[in-house]
Length: 356
Ligand SMILES: *Cc1c(COP(=O)(O)O)cnc(C)c1O
Image 1 (cartoon, rainbow, N blue to C red):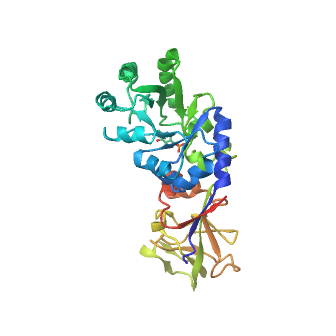
Image 2: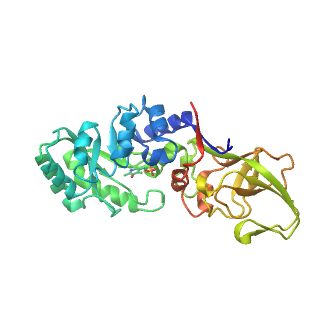
Image 3: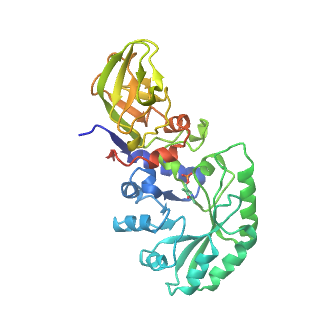
């Protein structure tokens, strides 16, 4: 069997969820969209089911998968329904939905659906992606109420720059929504991971932690605010071949690396088709038999090459950690000019092994 695996530590997931709740003093949707950021949505939901206040996914099909797996907790659709016909299924599966556009309100007006919808009404407080502009917000709110089909409305917004701890934009967004919804005493749902960890001044009744559940810092620079998190995924593989090259030899596609001295090279059975970023440059850290080493040469589809020169005890079958407990996924992501979110979402091909 191919020795490439993502080991998923579900105890660490619980720890991180509890940390999100403790830090925010709020009810928390565990955000498990995109197959729980590549960690396995059903497994993660089951691991958190007894403690989670709710789950959040991007769209209907992701929610139905959880219901069919027996998850009975509240599930919020972060993008709401994508066409009017989904409203019937939202009722049937007892889902909560975000409303971010007038067409969705019109759909509720026109559809004969149950009169017990739980709605999270989204304001565009500055991200300018989805949501009602502040000046539209109360109109949208009253129109929703007038449909007579909505039982609960919670005010929601999303921060676009909360990972930038020295940037004032998050406070500005917070002031905008607070001013409008506070007089109405609406329940609120504001914070994502960087807001929970980096902006304790921002309080809401519900929070929506995603990345932090998986134990990785949402901040680009290392921050002690994220230090209590425990990494959930360890991506690992093994050495399947070894070769010794003299100085001056190229390694891999495009000869992007040349040996500067006699070099012992290990070939690892994992590549970009497994979600390891192709843009990881020479020098990207890996851990081999508990010794630090690095990528040399370009990452291929199913294999990559590492430097074993300084690890004589490493050989065929040696274990290689690509990220996880020792190698920080954010570090690898930064070097590959992406973010840990994307690295995790791309982990589809390797087998997953769960630790309970
Ligand atoms: C994905 C998502 C989140 C979770 O964000 P993290 O940065 O991973 O914590 C929260 N809210 C919304 C609307 C999202 O789409």
